[in-house]
Image (tube, rainbow, N blue to C red; front, side):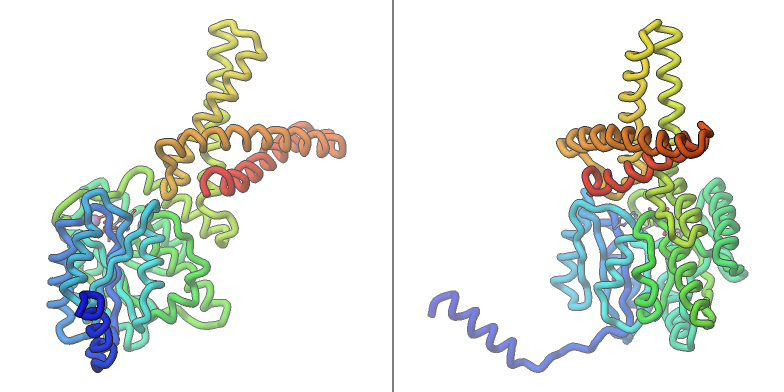
Length: 387
Ligand code: GDD
Ligand code: MN
């Protein structure tokens, strides 16, 4: 018998074997970036906490340089309920979570960080609340029973409290921890709102609460949110990915949701960066013309190039941190960005002149021209630069 025949025979045997499988009741979704020394321990702890409950453990890893995905795939060879969604060329906590949830068919899912900061021991209690009818159950750090513990620095604690107030404005609900990355819900509730979610940023729970609240309000139904307190633990191994960038993206999400999702976070950030670009432009123009005595035409040209380059770099780092262009693609991206913005400037001038002809008020025409070029540059660079 040749080797190939053996595997055919084996496949046949597998096919005829009864399915030794119980469908999972709970999917545990774990976003991960550089968490290789945490994932296996988290799995053990979750398995202990859930006892006999059939669950699946789905790690969504953005091709971490430390090789987390390989560690998870090794775990998947040993446990039938472990899965790795290995995303290549993409970054982002919210989109990772959405993708993990969407990959499961279990009736309930929980989202938990990989670094052991969230207390997996409350998962059974969270599940009970969801089964009893809560639409979203949040593991909270601030309720009477829960504590922030050693997990957060003083500044982060203050920032987190401020963010909690801001989001209270948005959700209209007095939740103790809408910033939590730890929550559990029925998949059916998530499915209703999935298309409305922003895949950008860090704060997926807040987004789900706002979107689900609005969707249910439109149907005259209430959104029931349960809370289970726990003590936030210090991170096990590795480093936090929270950064000033994440904070700016969060503010973008708040404004975006206040506009009912009409303006995507990335558009607001793009506009904000454009505003700073104007400042850079004026600064360079002043330096070159007033200080270095360059001809106006040359000074203005230099200012345009510097401001465009500035806008490109900042948008690449901030607005499109999840699709950041690197290496060769950074340079081709810069060229397409220059090209699009040049056409955007033409669009700006023609719209402004057209409006000026009707209206005769220079600032109205000027502002609408600027708005025109922001909308134009934003939409077209999304097609040609940050695809
Ligand atoms: N796939 C993927 N892609 N995962 C990511 C990414 C990413 O770009 N960025 C972060 N993660 C994963 C981390 O590996 C970790 O498992 C989890 O998301 C949280 O990231 P941390 O870097 O540990 O964030 P944190 O501890 O500062 O903040 C977290 O906990 C807070 C309290 O619950 C976040 O979940 C916050 O949203 C939350 O408020
Ligand atoms: Mn963490």
